Length: 308
Ligand code: HMG
Ligand code: MG
Image (cartoon, rainbow, N blue to C red; front, side, top):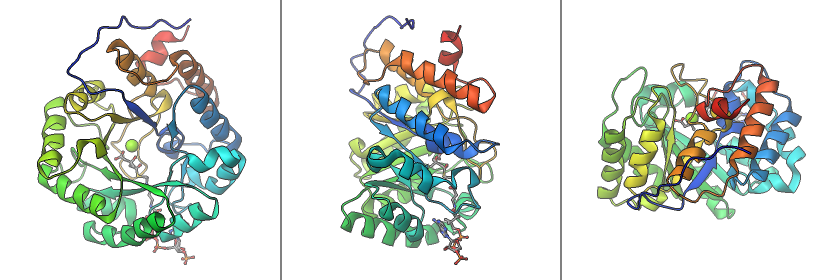
């Protein structure tokens, strides 16, 4: 049986928490070698069986931009009915068409808080990205789909340095105004610290955003991800993105290391007595199984501690 931390609740923290699992998409989009579609499907099934309710499956992006996810259609067909409720990334109308053809019900657009990353990741300027997203959100909403919006580089950008908080809020508000129902604020290169998280969430609140519409997406580059989650919980945010086994990064941001590991997040929330609905033993078994396919150990501290 997996060890579990002693439970000592902190009543000042928001709960229950929704874990938004991004490993099959954000984790695998950065793998040096292609992962077989069957392995991706099994990973998703295992994560759902472990109790994760939201598992982002893949991206309908240009296959030459992200070759690791070029099998998006094959994967969704393999998943069958189970796949339709899993969110998928769509950058533009072409991506939305591909998702609609397969009956997907949840899509996510992904914007940038900075000019340089918008150019590098989307081949668009900061302003042009909204024109690309507008018809995607409108048509997705008309078709009854739910739309999440990511904002990358919310805490720092490898080319532009510190990113002003009001610039992040302006981009996030524009994405919400297009009709997105949730905004995930990404620390793509993992430079954020706890006070910065508090300041950013407060700035959104002051700008009129319902904190319940925010999610936080941390990368653990400097070991700050869980401290940042704690700051987010204190500020009232209840949705956190994480990646099984701590996989991931962004192919268009070289300094983006692994996402916050789902196992580390589950251990942390369990200790605080915050409900999350996920079975840690199954998660660790899955992360260990996956390392067999990827050929290297998981960066997750919890996976390493609990693997004999
Ligand atoms: P573009 O080259 O400007 O595209 O790329 P375009 O609109 O000029 O079209 C050129 C050709 O591509 C056309 O084909 C289109 O049909 C085709 P042609 O007429 O020449 O034969 N095309 C497509 N084909 C398939 N699927 C599509 C698609 N779109 C166009 N969706 C584009 C613009 C946005 C497509 C490109 O820049 C792209 O795919 N970027 C994706 C980059 C990416 O996926 N990055 C990783 C995800 S973001 C992330 O990881 C961060 C996050 O985790 C949060 C965080 O950590 O911060 C979310
Ligand atoms: Mg990410």
